[in-house]
Amino acid sequence: MTVFRVTIRGKFMGLDDTGRAAVVAAGGAAYSDAGTFTHDASVSVFTFRCQVPAGPDDGEDEAALGAMVALDAHGHPYEILKIAVTDMRDIKIRHRSRRSS
Image (cartoon, rainbow, N blue to C red; front, side, top):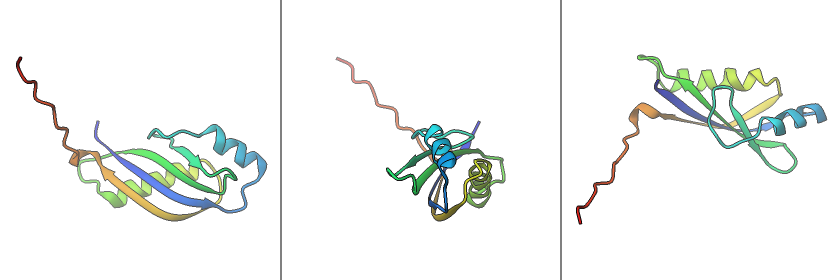
């Protein structure tokens, strides 16, 4: 399965104590379908990491929209500061060549 990895940087707008606890519980640096948060100590600024399945004709706009849907599913009010999309189909893996001894 090919995916996009989307990183959304933003800030929360009026997050209450229950919301803070939910963000902390969804913390992590891995990319996942539901998304994970990293945040500052006050849980006011965040980075949301999400992976979005890539259809054959999908581009960065569709991936960004898919990530915003995942972010919205968490139900916290926010303002987006920046979105970065990486199309994993474009990533080339270099394999180390083995030198014979």
